[in-house]
Length: 367
Image 1 (cartoon, helix red, strand yellow):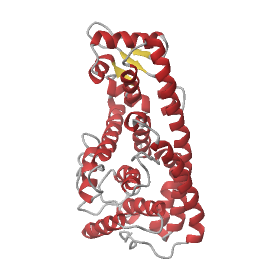
Image 2 (cartoon, one colour; image 1 turned 30 degrees about the horizontal axis):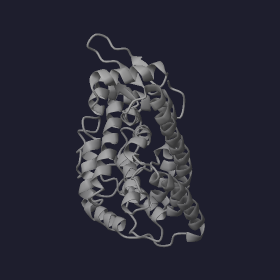
Image 3 (cartoon, helix red, strand yellow; image 1 turned 120 degrees about the vertical axis):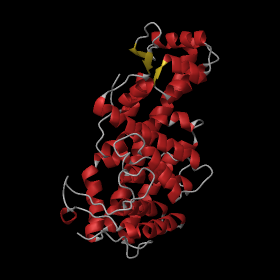
Image 4 (spheres, helix red, strand yellow; image 1 turned 90 degrees about the horizontal axis):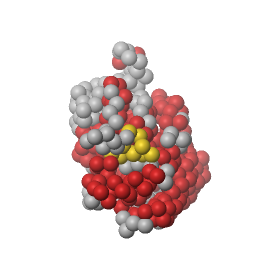
């Protein structure tokens, strides 16, 4: 099989009659979601559950098996061993890459060097750490069944000698303005996946870039719009649509799929963010009624940002006096807002969980 030769961007000959109805629906739903984002006072705290979920689901597309609560438990100090620990580390790297990207984009544009930095974070201390973290590939690779030859491959990415040219064209297209921004986002994601610039981690980097591009182009007010939930649920079609581009040049089918993904994910995100906002507001009143404390918002923001936590870490993060903090946590446990996941013992700090937020984030009752 010959290496894939990417189409020149912007694409010509798209079926705009077919795509524009989908473009309109996707823009409408994304606009509704961004309306919610604009009303959030402390988005980094409030949207932390969506960031955690994205890290888990994008990594799950690549084969990891950990859940949101397991990742938070590991972070809090309930240590997982073996394969699960490796999966969790990959997810924590993804979350770190997302947060690093959010901070970077406040001052700097999306560039190829920035993409390489994200990749370095993503691949740190995990299974792909021996596959040139932060460096574009220098050899020909291919995708197929384990042990297959290049002739038996399902897909052969572009020749490494042409890689830099393809990536520079891709970056120029990102900096330009196509006929519609969401249509352009669909093309940017697929072109990156087909160029396949890294030896490993291309899918996760490609999915991270979706909200970053939308944010840089001012389509969303926070770089928090994640597609991995929809893509994970429709994994077979996701890969088939990308494959149809490389095998038959079916860009229309891919773009239609991607626009539908944006529409449906925006609806889902809308519902989830409304639940999170509703929980935050109700908890603000409830915690104040229970504790009568001037530190209500300190407490609330801390358990929203990390809904599974070690009590000693909670004291450090809030800056509260230890006796004050432990007293407030005890009141929240008695009221049923927090739950013991691991009781304290001697010098070992207790680990607590915030069930209502965790259940929203996971989409099912886990505590």
